[in-house]
Image (cartoon, rainbow, N blue to C red; front, side, top):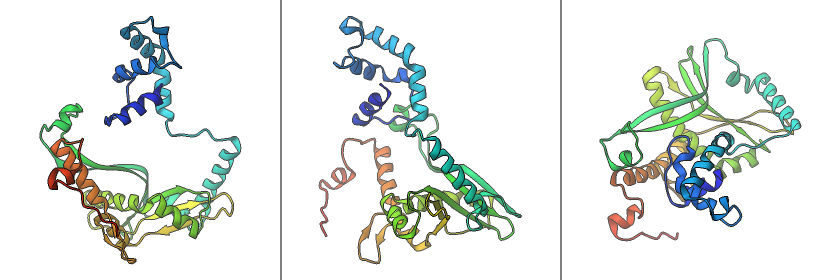
Length: 279
């Protein structure tokens, strides 16, 4: 029922903020209850009774599904393998400083950063979604922030699990799953956070840390500043291909929020057409 409800919300284009609450899905509960394979109450219950009973009987189960959403139950052997890899990461000289605090350093794990972006008034987006704080934030949870108080440096390290951690396969994964886009975005959060708490510290290029279950050796992938800026602001890469930066995507999202237009594209609204670029 929980997954069906979320699918209905997604198909309807409804944005849900925070943890979903079962009582927020009255209409979805009733529509799903009438499906032939469910037929709750065999057609003899009123809508109000169906909703009341589903919420009373299903809230705990619904909460549990929300809590484990997107997670996979692993085997005992998988768990042992994961514990072994953690031990290797903590012991290997290449990865140890990112997991075990070194002298003169500070390590922050799963640090949530909330960076104010734009302050609005009571525009429809906030009113319709019952959002009291009329500020939009850039936010993210960074796996590891490594602060060196001796060298006065700060670095973001993002840990990635991988079936194959070695160069050619993992570089393919970086491009396919857009890890670079993620660390480029995190880098801007880290920079704003640095300005507030550690002014004067230098931000080092971010890294992905990964390890696989076969050769069991940590691999550190270091990103280049120019690549991160291209992913952020867009432009043309070394092969002449146009790259759309995430700042442009963010700008489009803000346009929809500010104008409260969700049923049409920005191009159609502003220009009356969408330009086609084939090559």
